[in-house]
Length: 83
Image 1 (spheres, rainbow, N blue to C red):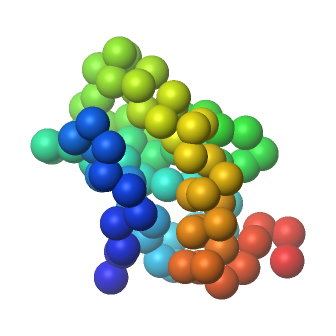
Image 2: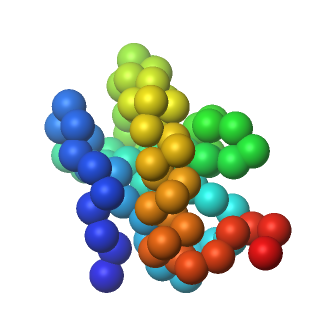
Image 3: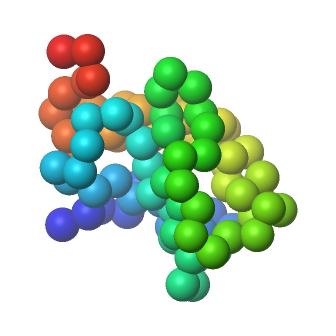
């Protein structure tokens, strides 16, 4: 099960278990999905369907809550990349 960590401006932010070690968060809205790296910096990893202005909005939201997302990721996954 992938818990929802935040909902904002119609976007849903989730972390999937057992996907890969690099810290990231998935963002969904309607039929679109993006993956955003949380480390070493917040940046887009993959985009499936979001327009450029939506990606800019998503990156701003992720940067605002990056520390919270990192903490939630660690609690959910149970480890960091460098552990």
